Amino acid sequence: MVFEFLLYKFGVRALIGGLIVAVTCASLGVFIVLRRLSLISDGLGHVAFGGIALGFWTGIYPLYTAVASVIAGALGIHALSRLRVASDAAIAILFSGGLAIGIVLISMAQSAPADLLSYLFGTILGINDNDVYLAAGLGVIVLVVLILLWKEWVAITLDPDFARVAGMPVTPLEILFTVLVGLTVVVATRLVGVLLVSSLMIIPAIAAIQLRLPFRRTVLTALALAIASVIIGLQLSFSYNLASGGAIVLVTIGFFIMTALFARLLPKMKRELPVDPWEHQCSEPGYMGSREQKNREKT
Image 1 (cartoon, helix red, strand yellow):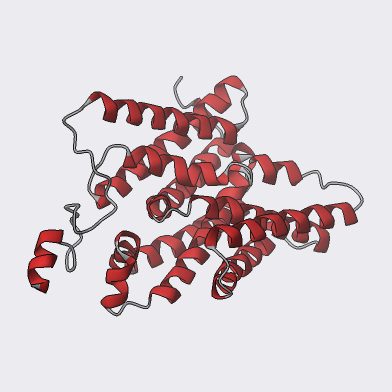
Image 2 (tube, one colour; image 1 turned 90 degrees about the vertical axis):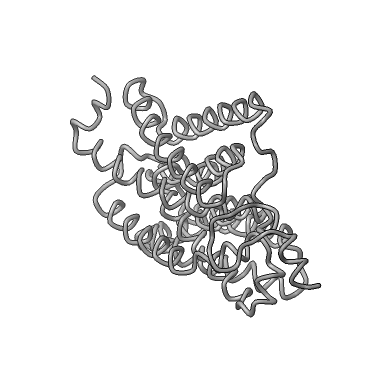
């Protein structure tokens, strides 16, 4: 029977939690990839690991301390940028610091908590109701903010100089976006694990970008690929007793290979990436157009 894991309560919980994570991750993934910040989710994932270790050490629910740590990490990245530290270097510093804090706190606990591996490698088939509620709450926050500020973040992603000229508060919006990425990392940590969380966020987005679609369709395609990856990965995990997080990520890689081959096998397909609102016919209303129109307005 296909999707027989849905016959069990833990399977239904896994599907609900997986769909929440898929939608949340994929919604931000395209923005992250086009802004060339693919490593930020990995860096914040390791900061979350430090927060998880702090939770085990203090006896607080680990995902609560992970939320606090990724918010602090997101603010730390922008604080370092004000000190003229390059963004990739700031992410590397947070990456190393979060991992080091986690290792030190676990060593102070004398023995590794039994539940630690589930946070490192994910255990979507073993999540409880509290995990689903937390994922749903954080996911709703991320999606609501993303929808409310959709136009602003599209503008910042595709042409930050234009966004500044238009009077948008670029720096506060970037800080808020980084915080949302951190919250999304926490949502996904329990399901696919710290070590794989960036994969679910980045790979469906890259796969969707291969198809050279308009921006909004690219995001929707990334959503569809992420959702399909979770469903297929859960089925493979249940049927063949595989690690659920790894199975989901391998499915996303399979989709990336398929979309990359599909794009290469159709030479007549539009080749340019949707990275410039003036050259790409994006459907975002209000400020999008062609570069030629922009130049004509200047002259």
